[in-house]
Length: 570
Image (tube, rainbow, N blue to C red; front, side, top):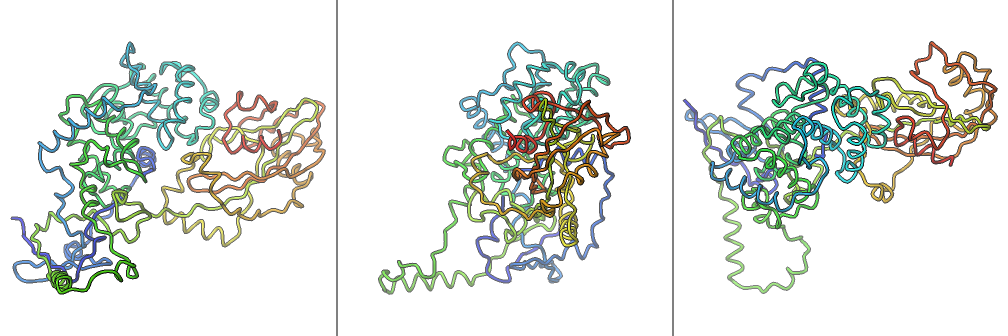
């Protein structure tokens, strides 16, 4: 039997607490988190005792729940039922479906991965897979060129599976988040080996493939095979959180579960799951944007609770507003003010089922975004501060043939398997190591994301004024002897085969990762050798090569910040 409760507000509630809130994206990538979780065994903590479940205190107002025996229990001040986040009826769902499909047919963008005419189902699935992996954390305008180049080189999954990781990295070079490329390549090998080159159509089987998480599986199943399964990415999260006014951290498992349930409610019996799911993503990308949503052009404006809340919100007038000095003094205005004051003192009473209280939504006090508009949803959580890192990059090149030395990075970790000029990360001081440890404790997922972030446009990067972190190593320390000891002896059997002529600092490159702010100090190091030095078998470096400057980008996979370093010597 369900227990009914009464909620009495201990004090007046302000507008901020009465409403609900706003990655995306921004997001991190839910598939990346899922893939990491597949590698680690996770343990779930049991909930506290029944008394703790029914007693929660937070900042702001207090809600008291009065049971029949008149005992008061303090609860989290959500101020609403969980049903607020559910669709009201099948009729509302049908209205959303119809409006979205009509809007999508008229407004969808002409994108290369959406062209399915004359293609086999397996090829369509492969193209959807490639595009969805590329689009994670990357703008559509950037992806188009890379997608066309990729499909031209490997038009089918068999051709991708038969290539090498070096070739894959070369085509992917500059797109960022290089782990995506490796997982896509490994996934193609898995499909060829285990499914006879046929990409599965059901979500459960797709999740077995390396690099495919719930979102990518839903995208392939619904878009390529027209199956009625949900997909939830950063754009869909933004749309659903505003339509159903979900003011919770979008990264929490309980919130993610709710988004998938809502997505399933919308798509489970729709006539065209392929177009409907794409319409949700398209709406989030074009109309329901992060900072400047165009609500008046939205096809489901009338169904959007966030929009209705924004219309009802009255911005408080500043205390020192000049309009106060020109208002006529009359009895009517005084009476109105008295009415307002008396209405404030009335404490509303709301009856809710104990099990129906929303335990997902949170206060906006710690939100890292606006709190008075549609943009409050989904709630923006303050991210852990990225750590600073200083790197010395040595452009060692033979002057006679203009050949530059490159070595390949390890198979795992940051920028895995990419080529770079020999580099040394400066050791951190004790205080910096302590800060790094604190950041790791606060946000382990961010630290595990060892990939490159390319979310900002070049124009935006230029406009931002960033303070350069101090370089730990002085230029005086970087000598010919230092390079011989720290680099040449580790890379080659005999370091004496190479003669470094000079060492000169030629500039710095600042590059931003999702969790690291790198300052790369670049050194020009011309050298001579009579015959090409023999690599050291004990070296941790996978491969070593000498390439001409204009051949580097076309011959091997090189990261974006390393290309910037080479640009300094041109």
